Image 1 (cartoon, helix red, strand yellow):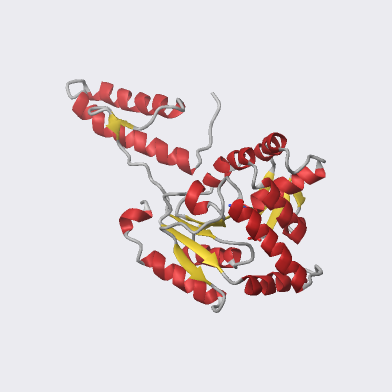
Image 2: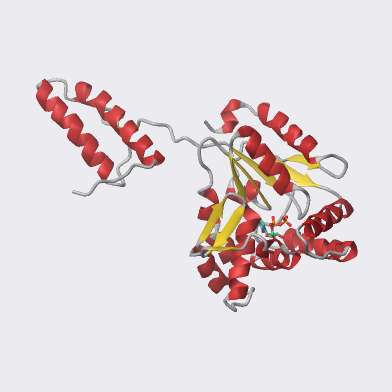
Length: 292
Ligand code: CDP
């Protein structure tokens, strides 16, 4: 027999199966001998756990014993260079939550397409590639097929390419599950364009984070220069406008402020102030809508 290592989810599943059966066996099979009961408990647990599609059930009422646990999500959407990434990472750090930079996935899909000579508008092929991309997030670094591409995907050209592939419906579909898989214990902070509308519509807190185009261009120029890339503010303004236009007007998952999203304009405030506002809103989020 081969031995399996349990990951966290499997462990939760095994324990809930165990306690469901532990509860059920004495009541449902009350007249059997204690030795047989023990045998039954042990073997029910064994077979339930090792058959993958068996869910923990209460054998008496035939209903699920455990309520599905849905970890809370804070969804931060907004236009390019509004400071989403910085703010989202700090909020995640403050709460001890996971962090998803969804834009990086579109940037990686575009980079992979460019490297393989696939036209950025070829929805089917780029979608197929996106589904199988070998991506690893290692600390601050992002690896594509084992190669560090953290800087390559951060250029303005990579952002423009990302927004071209991000307008393709099959590519968006191909990246859905990958994004949702980031929702893990104890919670997730994510940023992008459709976090609150498509990926996590049940997010506990939705934020629309924005700033004037001038403030955004200034920040982006500074960011690029810090990375040793050349940037002229007037060109950056033009590029931001093109990207905004494409992200807002595309038919699939367009960038928009949702009616249930808090508006956070960071033109005049610092990243720390933005983080403080989000933490304050989150602390006031009713427990029932936090999802656990
Ligand atoms: O950091 P910045 O806001 O400039 O860009 P990003 O978040 O890395 O996203 C790059 C591009 O990917 C955006 O211009 C969007 O077109 C696209 N994107 C998207 O469509 N949906 C997302 N959830 C995230 C990014």
